[in-house]
Image 1 (cartoon, rainbow over the protein chains, first blue to last red):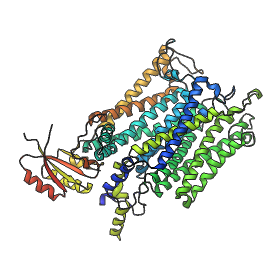
Image 2 (cartoon, rainbow over the protein chains, first blue to last red; image 1 turned 60 degrees about the vertical axis):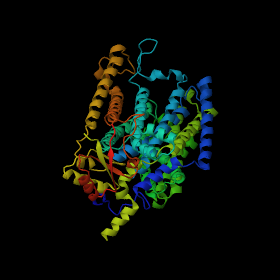
Image 3 (tube, each protein chain N blue to C red; image 1 turned 45 degrees about the horizontal axis):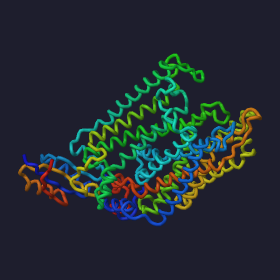
Length: 465
Length: 175
């Protein structure tokens, strides 16, 4: 027991009288049981949204990008907004599993699996947008470094858009193997419990025949650590490169050296908000309240305050610089007096309200530890972060250097439909995941049971007094 | 040689650790230990050599970096030099700053994937592989210690009972 000592001042991460076997049972339950009515309702709503979005995508591909609200001035708007929004959401998963692993944060273990699942599903959605926006998605493979059929013209490695291709595909595939490697022991647990032969077959296949030898575990831990070390700079690089799509251009409002760090902070901010949204629901419907506790919610809220604070300072800097240059072109960047009072004032103030003002409520401990408040604020941040990207893109592009380039963006039903469709697609994937995958890294949670389990902590505290 | 092995089950990681130390101090060879989760320090107690996977990751990363250097140089400097945005294309070195993201991503891509593939190969895990843990409880809450038997069943059983094993079976090992 002494090797599992943890300061008594730390709150328990696993509530109730749990044994190793109880953890197995609790985490296998959502997979082995039947889905309830709420799951089906949520699933069909998500499926309907997804199909609607796919309809809009087919319409776009069949008819052309003219079905969107783009114009000669604003060549990308909702699609790139959604792309950046989804990529940003995709940042929390790897941050939780990689950065928090390096910092030895035990609380990550209850949430890393779902956060990584969210990352992977979000990056799927993000990846859709550049492909659809190509207009001819069947030529999508031209982004790969291969000579095309018109001669040996290669891809342009100087372009931030190509860096994006490399960064996001690397991020997706590295996140996927990180996630899957962590899943192997948990799939093996489900496999060894399965009674139906079909289920046994499927989980045997998914678990890659994991047997849990001492040597396997030694390698497993080393691989997790090295992958975390590799994924940490990777996760920071992805949104840095996304921000370079803007920052390397010479548009006022985009050509900003603070974009990379501030985009990364914003991505973590929005990613944690989405984790908060998803887990707020999931802990209830899967009866995992003893594993995803108030303390987990509070820790995530603390990360949200920190990254939200970085974002707020970045906004203030951008606003100040826009004003301080006294340049008329800078006065219509997305954070400027011009934006705050112009025709996009509603978007500007939405950003300030959802992204800067509401997260400040989390300074109050009561609110930070409240499930319902955390849930509401997380939805607000999701909206706010969407507005951030919309403002950066649409407001900046809506007022060019010449009066003839003053155009506004009006989305069509296709723009909106594709966005709703990706939300539906995301939830379809997540709901299927929640029914078929072990949603908590049970093998890892078992390692902290003795140090951070409530009953063990009580036992130890009793001994000390 | 007989293929008989003894399977001792434990239900607690701390008891298992003490048992491993005890069995090894009595000069018995532990063939294998199956665990439901990583037990800190078990590899040292069993005398397993440290894994070299991290070193392979470093080497794979170097390969990825080398490949990216070759790729960017061949495609953008040698085969079809282009003047894009006035970025110099006479030498790879002068154009290198614009390639840093690509160099970095390829390094990570190679290191991560090849290391994981190496791990899967070394630990013999891949799709359609049959699991080899002798008892399904070892992925739940039981730890299993496997010791080969050389006509010393009684002695071993007594020793293992003393270390807190909850169940001891002598089985014929196939394969």
